[in-house]
Image (cartoon, rainbow, N blue to C red):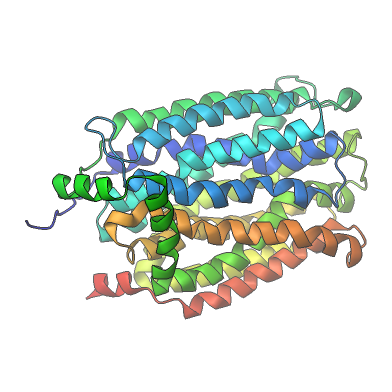
Length: 442
């Protein structure tokens, strides 16, 4: 049997297959920009925030390899391989987004974060494998760039929603009696609806290619049936990771320590360093929370634009050179927040962080996809997520200690530490071998 040659997809086919990420990023952006704010409003201390945030990476650690393995071993004539997981994850994540702003006590908000992050991961993980499934090597960078574009667009709007509701629609931004502000509540409601509709657009406008040999696929799936065999397959794959994947793992480790520090601490850092308050119940703290949404919207918007520029630069140089440059720019930008005490100037480092974010969402996955076996694309994309969530777990365990004992509670210094980690990640990119791009140039 001849190898299946994947057809080149049109711009609108790339658009449709990636549009679900617009909604998925609504979930992540609302989570990233508002979770610490919600926890603080419900009584969490700055030292405890990293521990509460552990819910997010731990669910990713557990969910993504399992979902990747299951989607690799799924095929339905109508639903395909990845789309059943898009569908189920979207319903669960939308439900969690409606529940989160209705948390009345801290433990409830932490529990909903577990549900929300697990659900987002169910629908998100197969999207990475989806690109490898449907696109040939030459289009994979463009496919991941299109995902990055929608991630950026979704994050811009989602990050701005609390400000839009409070400043333009007259919705209250006050944490009355320790409750979550209505501006945040309505933002999560809108996010839940958009999440569901966007993912469903991809589910119902995109078809999947069947396995190259359906009979062979059915036979292999029959052999792997059963919990014991599934566990053996999942664990056994760790020892067979491609060399490129291991090299990228080290880069990812330092990149995501930086991002996790930023997501956890930006609200408290800006409230302390710019708004001169550490009182989570104060109007100034809530205003800082809204401004952080604007800052995050800027870096997300920059990433959406950069997503289409990076593949062009990568063709002229190399993917790993572009990734190295972007990470160094992002790290220097993140570090510079420590020096800024005027809120208007905080927009400028967000530009550099946006450039780094665009590359983090595009280049490692494009490099990785070319080194993976097609029949285990979903599984290895899930395993690759380990190197996203493990640094977040490490951060959750140690950043609070560093903040309290080395930085005297000043979380802006913790963000500076994250910037240094991102610069280290940039230089480590030099050691990554990108075989796929070499084959394209030949």
